[in-house]
Image (cartoon, rainbow, N blue to C red; front, side, top):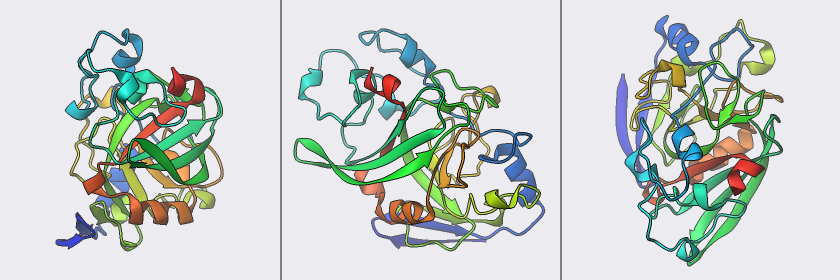
Length: 270
């Protein structure tokens, strides 16, 4: 059953599911597990990466706020997130006041750094940072189900959840046994999904993180999350420590329209 209550400017959803459906849902969209488990994937960022900066093309399955803007606005007037170039900077919504930047060491690297920025005045202030991991094979601008690479792009952060009770999240939080990592995975993976934040790549905003709807089609993947780290690369998600997840859950505020800007440093700065 599901209850609703207002918390910290957001709406909290709490759902506890204990049926056999839990294992089935995870198999359909689990991230971070051993190789045989289907990978998490996401919404197509590929057209935007391929098209010239002055030719706005709508990307299927991507929220309207993240579509390339119409030319004419001077990019020099837009506050810059450190290390992020014009191509991705222009997709940060104008009303966003929180940006979680994922800086990967290299295009084929599973190692990254996550930094939270808050917009204050005309600039972005660094709040906190943490070591992180991403897809085992690195990054891609043309993500597909099972490629074990994380998608480069800008995505909203609208829903959270996990196996553990809500730690005080501002984002809507769904507690569900259906999110748990299967016990046939190695023990080091068992707590990956104790806390998760859905990255809005090929998913429907306003639904629990493990909702299986894929607006851009199954081949483009889905269910890409921020989740707890197990010490190595993921199927396509971004993973950080438990401490970092608790901090982000308590800090990311839907009223501040948080987004994640993620990729290897070369693609981010383009």
